[in-house]
Length: 428
Ligand code: SDX
Image (tube, rainbow, N blue to C red):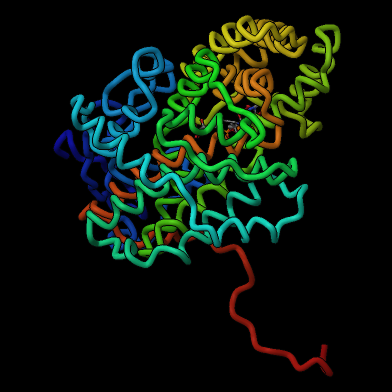
């Protein structure tokens, strides 16, 4: 077979399937005709070996711990770029010129307000509702407000919906926080940066002026960049699958928020800080390491391990630096940070974690920083959703405009009852 063919031998018959090569990373075996040619499906729950799409947005090399957004390494973007610039890059494929960045930033700043009716929507939630429950509800409800941007076959309307989502997520997240603490909503102030606006809406009050702390603003900007996109993770795949049916873009993003909430995914930042607080002091670390290694104990080290990274998550390295900067700048002496660093060192030298290639991921240190800035743990995943929205909409746009795209409809290995006749209840 030509070297760009894979051969499968099934039932004594050899079948060839084309092998496709990306610009970098693993080749793929194109099995779209497998069922037609062999009558068999592949079986890959969790999609550990499955490429669900072709994409040019984000590349991850899990063995080397590399993360590129449109080819640019995450550590360079984290150090040199802004969230608006990275958002433009993810959406459009190239870094913007000065003029393009100014126009994009202006456009986003003009969509930061929410329809006043949505303020009423918040009042339907209990005050102690989890911010992610509110985010799911409010973002889904946006689909009831925008009928002028739901022809998803029109690239212009897709971009309007994308800009609205990127612009409104900080307002929605800040309002969820304000609602939970019984403070009044703070309207956007468009003269501020995207991140500064979010901090003011979150921590400002009408009773006094709010000064954005530049160190906190820079830390939040970098945290948003670190969370912006991450290839075909669970929530992005959820957005793509929802979008493949032609669903309303706001409803698709609400589906992504729902998936991100899980503690195995974006909910891990909240779970990781709760775990570090439960450990409390370095002396208790061995007890939790033992639990994480115990097959009969469902406990896992939150913020550790990753489906793709079998090396250090490059975002975790940046996050650890931000933690040192922010805690130093704010004069926060949080014992949880010491526990995190001690836990990391112990785990990285433990055979179990070495063998299974378990390293800290983006969620391990993020909670330490967010807590130092003043966010409650319940807001951590809402901040992740805020930042990941640009990745979700970039991937959604790419999916809709992909000529090879079809509605996602996986099959199964059926192990249930074969056909049998109905038995009336009197005879059972
Ligand atoms: C994110 O996909 C993405 O890109 C996600 C994300 C993004 O930006 O979108 O990067 C964000 O979700 C980061 C991950 C956050 N989740 C956590 O920190 C939760 C804790 N981590 C684990 O639940 C786990 O590592 C996953 C869910 C992240 C990955 O799980 P996999 O790929 O399904 O791996 P696995 O469960 O098969 O684990 C392999 C082995 C298992 O042991 P064996 O069955 O082979 O004996 O490693 C063990 C697991 O038990 N293991 C852990 C562990 N993670 C995996 N053991 C202890 N502690 C852990 N954290």
